[in-house]
Image (cartoon, rainbow, N blue to C red; front, top):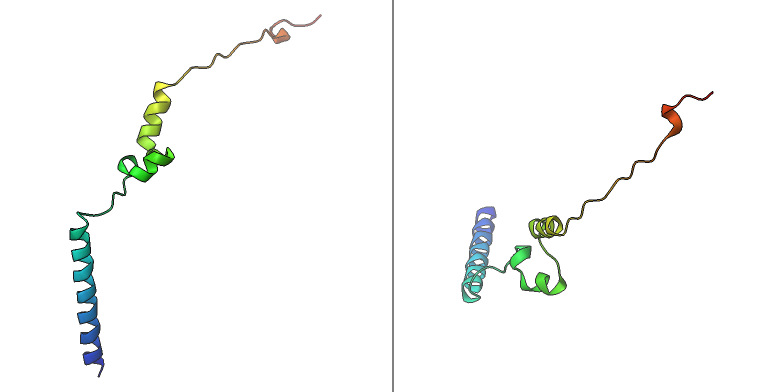
Amino acid sequence: MTVTFFVIVLILVGIALVLLGIGILLKRGFPETHIGRNKHMRVRGINCANTTDANDRKNYKAIEIKEEKSNLSHPRG
């Protein structure tokens, strides 16, 4: 009884995998999951981390730190 059930389940899973494979082949491959090459992500303005980092490095502006004169170097009195 359990062996027959196991064989039926294996046949159903095998058929499902074959149908999924045929679906992938008919659609010309897997959907693009990489953020940088995904059309919908580009439309939304979302970039991958490497692109964001490169853009930040291109637009980098160093900040100036102004040192204030302190009276601590001169003793009172």
